[in-house]
Length: 164
Image (cartoon, rainbow, N blue to C red; front, side, top):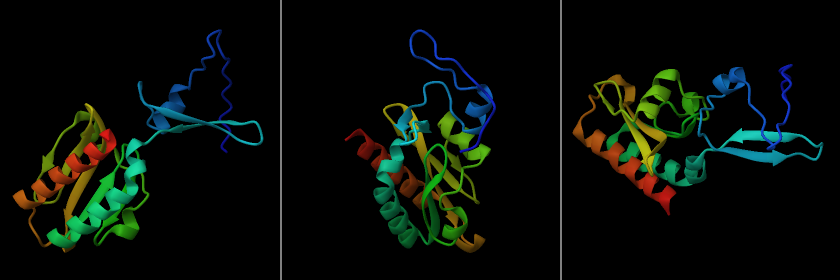
């Protein structure tokens, strides 16, 4: 565990403030859910909760199927990292942190469609919980309506799985 040198006191309601520097580095925003664990050594561990991570098996199966049908690379992410990939970039992308551009797209609930990528946010109960990105395989294929619809179907399916 990395020491930060920051000490905080617990207030009379049992609250502690997570320093801004740590929230920024870990991309923790106001309203984000956190899981709380304790270790055998008496440590309290806070972990950003990823609801879509519980669906990693569904996400992986969707990515495999969509990649096979479309002939494209399919990437599923939560709001922090990539949780499923199928296609040419699997080794390079799986379990990597998402970049600031994808984070902005997810938080703004934007849809991106251009010749180099399609990004559709996964929205469950009004909250952005991740995204589906489709990339052309080997840079040769131009992405279009079929790939957009496949991303929209996948995002809707994963969002509904979260709600059940």
